[in-house]
Image (cartoon, rainbow, N blue to C red; front, side, top):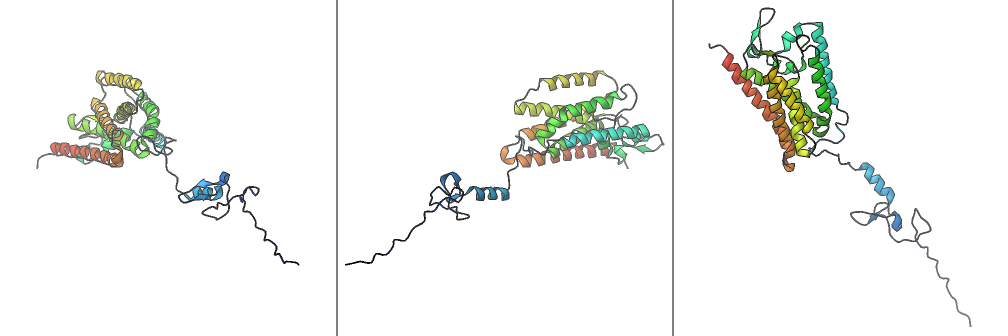
Length: 298
């Protein structure tokens, strides 16, 4: 007696698409291909293969590294602002050498008679002098070319480090507002006829900021303290130097750096935007008050 026996169907065992010799029953949740433990990558749900993970990483937005003060970590790798400021000061100095009118037309001056006989100055509506003076330097006199050489050396020495930790726009705001702070203090407490040129107010602001931020980050601040003390001694002992410009720049730079360095993490952006604006408004109000004081009564 014979019996019919049906053949047993063959079953194929699934294998990893990258390693065909390895049996597996796990599929990639994105491409549905079988993957072995070596090719598995944990996902929010299930596992993904290495190719799908790599493809997803290419399309994902990468987090931008930032410094401890909130600046983009790679944005200030090249100190573009420092280079630009040095270039602007050198260009202004060359313009001074080409025409003596550059100094008279753009130096800091409260109110005075210009070489052409006309009256000019901040009190006469030439507010731009508060800003342009920080790019000018003496081309002769007791300091000569050493004036611009020292200021540009100081900017080169401390500028790149500050620009890297603060980022470009914070560093630029620090420099400009420190320079304005020096001009405004001269305008406020000096004689209307007092004039001044130089980036020293902005440079002193950078010195002050370097000290404050160095203390905040736990870095060595001894060298900058020595440099500050030496320069303050020179400021008050050598005739012809505007101490108002130096002290005003130092005060504004240190105050603004404190707002940058000690802003609470949760409101860092608010502080970093609000502090420069508040300083600018304060300086503008002081200038308007002094201008009103110097304006002749109607």
